[in-house]
Image 1 (cartoon, rainbow, N blue to C red):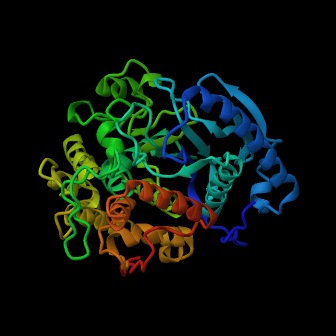
Image 2: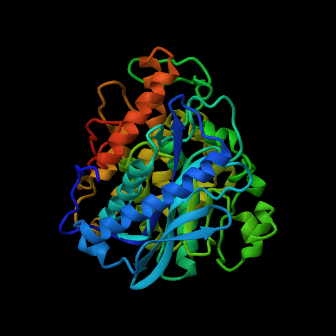
Length: 474
């Protein structure tokens, strides 16, 4: 195994809710191309076998953290999934009960020939446990990958000439361990309200066919780039996520058991048909699945997004009622965030702010009084909504600013970075590389390969390397 630059602490920080992450990773050849479908199926069988052997060796011979060792219920095994083929399955305990998790294999999208490697963490109860597993499965992926292939972690292959259904890359979060279904649906409603904010922070697919969608324009040190789409993955993907239609967008829910209302709103016949939504609260595992984020280049940013979801869920748990900002508001800002990320204009004219204030004045103040018009300002409002909560600080027992995996998120809106001013995401990072390489996308792809490796070896490292400048309320 590659030597870790990050060490598991003696006292890991507990999470309010269990959390697992599905990471979709690109495997490209030296020309930046995907393997053919038949080659991919053959290759994955060998990789899964090697991954099993490496994981067994880690468990039996390496000094893994005792918290993790105690949760491994059985020897890792290869199982067969009708959609994915051979996968590496791990039996892992959650609250003492073993759960079988397919942690490594080919993505199961059967609608198209898929080239996606799926690396999955088990459900974790500590921040550092989630970090350890995210790094472990990605390190295994590096070790079993043939020498002629390379890993790239981003929402889209910058050299891909056109969009194909099923050929984009995302991070999916699964959150669980709720008190009851009513708490779960409150948390779902909270995620739904802030979905554009999470989306804007996680855009990471700003190039296709070797270039961005428009000329790069830098204003001062700001990568404004008004015509450059920040998430080509989401811009093109209108069949495997929620539609930009307020009438049929995933609805605000009051009764968690009224599944027919959920299905009728999004016009799906069954939960199986409905599962590919931005947020899905009815998984077979009893979790809420959030599917909106582009694949992040860094583990640090993946964990930062997961922590934001944890903090929003904790807020929802302690609220009497989570307000509804309305599908029209969410969809408008979803569209804007896809196109311009944190530079998009935050639109709230369709929301009934007075009614929302009557339900929860603090929520309304942080959501609507953003002291600016950009999504960057809206994210600052979300961070204020979280950071001013004393119960959050009491739960974690350490200041949030002391959790390093939140640094990349804070840097995106408050930070100091040598090469650019906020707002910044990994989409802007790709645009900056393209600009630095004078439009040579092949060299840019090489940079992404190198950066993906660096971020796997050191899970605290992020391409947005700078000073976070945490606000006072954090």
